[in-house]
Length: 93
Image (tube, rainbow, N blue to C red; front, side):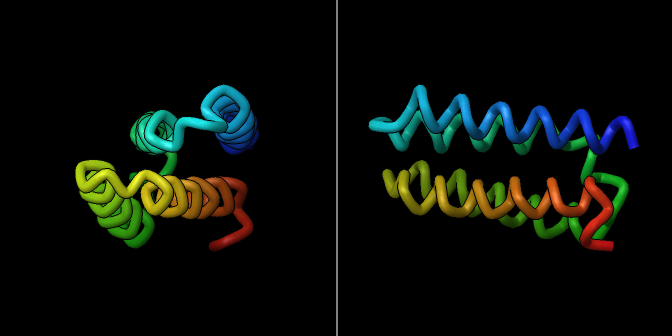
């Protein structure tokens, strides 16, 4: 439970901070979200199903970033962060 609460706080804080600091820079927000997902690996690796979805989403986000499609990357990563957060809170089991 403590881990879920801490992850929730971390994800929320990083999303709020990244949104306010990178409002005009979607490439920075994309990179920040990718880093947030990579930092949360310990939270989603216990679920093989979620781990597979997150890995695929992370690969897609990195490809979108490489193509310069930063808004698409941000959308992909924010959805993934929300999915990780829901699962870690125990609401999506």
